[in-house]
Image (cartoon, rainbow, N blue to C red; front, top):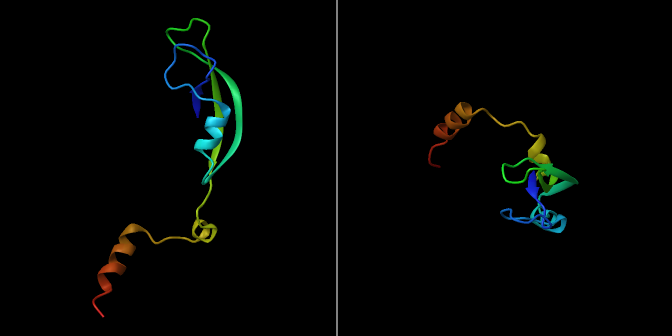
Length: 84
């Protein structure tokens, strides 16, 4: 994720490192947050920003490794299940 830093003036929605960590606290791993320069048309030398690397964590580890049926097979299985 690329975003503007709070110490950069005249940018929309600047954030801090803590803002990034808080926004991705649940269900994510923050791999890194590094300073970055963002090219813009209004900042000749670039705008100060953050480049964050994030990894989405599986909600249920067993669900992440279990193969799922292709949509057509799942739909057919649902049609075959009639009222009991």
